[in-house]
Length: 207
Ligand SMILES: [Zn+2]
Image (cartoon, rainbow, N blue to C red):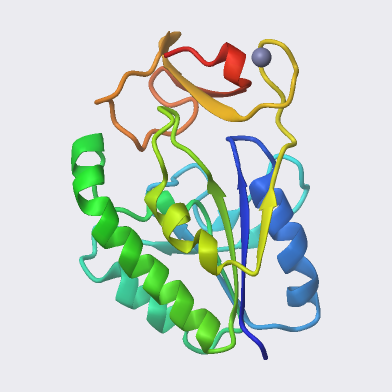
């Protein structure tokens, strides 16, 4: 089988996981072996891939990020699989402050990108739904590392601005109604402890 890499990019709620699931579904239906990865940070979805726009879920392998060799574990689990998915690769990072994220991101992103490219070279089909920018407009290192190797990039635009209903291009995050500031934790779930995410257009993004 010829390897490939498909990226599904967009804001929060843009339909990226849905599009990835709709693309992977027929391959699984045709009997392809697969593993879909979810990071242990995503406690909301646990051991499934889920999209608000779909009535079904797909079983996922939760990767415990507290294990120092979690990338090695992912590689072992992917070894005999034809189809591999990584949901929100930015969350596969062992730290939660923007400072330490940015310090570690290059090393982490490069390692994960290396792994994905090895899988592709081995003939595996890799599917990755990911935000294209953080809530604070900062880059998602992994995406910029891997983008140029993708066979197909789909920009998902299902989300509309929560203020004006125009197509959304950014993700706004608020904490108790106030725009999130640089220095606040990167990895918080929507609805957790006063944190909320909204898709917005550039005109309605609040710094
Ligand atoms: Zn707007």
